[in-house]
Image (cartoon, rainbow, N blue to C red):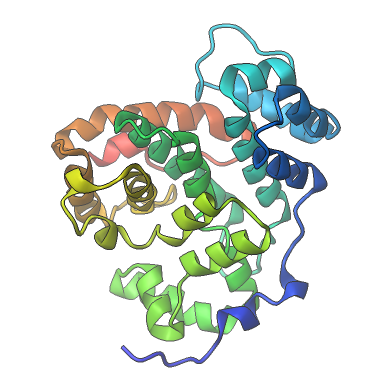
Length: 300
């Protein structure tokens, strides 16, 4: 369908409306691109930010990693779980702290982050099950996939009021409605935001492709390379129900994608969902996020 509202994404994301990331997150990102940096280097900006240090230690002591003993130092955490996992978590924590909470109808920023957390845990676990080596990047990509939505709601409230109403009445994906109206969607908006923050290219690609599951799975899944499989894990995670949903509108699409990507029956989802629910229930309170109204396991 021809676009009906000529709004350029570049005009929405003007430099003056983009929040700045904390210096600790920028330092960690810069070091993540330097292979010469080790745990001691990464520990310095974390320890210089008491709030971030506390969150990192809560993160590594959650059931997400499942250590039998408490991790009490940042250096120990970095050595045990790796600099990539800690950097990716710190990045999400930084984004969480700077994204605005728009005054937009029933929109709930914490619910958005709760959805992102559950999807990220799922993407990581599925990636690991499919032997994807960069499963921590899948976690970060899924966490950040919807980070542009609050900014879009804040900058384009009139347009998104109509889109949200159509989404509810027509049962369609937000990305498809955005494409019709603007010619771009929130995945492209989030990718632009990631680029302007100089996030790693792999993150940008994962974020940008999360609304394109059909394109990613168009070929025989056995012929997909590791990056394509990882991107498909993140895209599949985007089809999970919201933590506020009691019905799952995209369940059939999700199950079809899961079967194509994993080669397994959707019946195997129960065990995977149990693991995601357990990690999510343990991790969400650490970030002061609300509990889901319905667990993933209850949908299958």
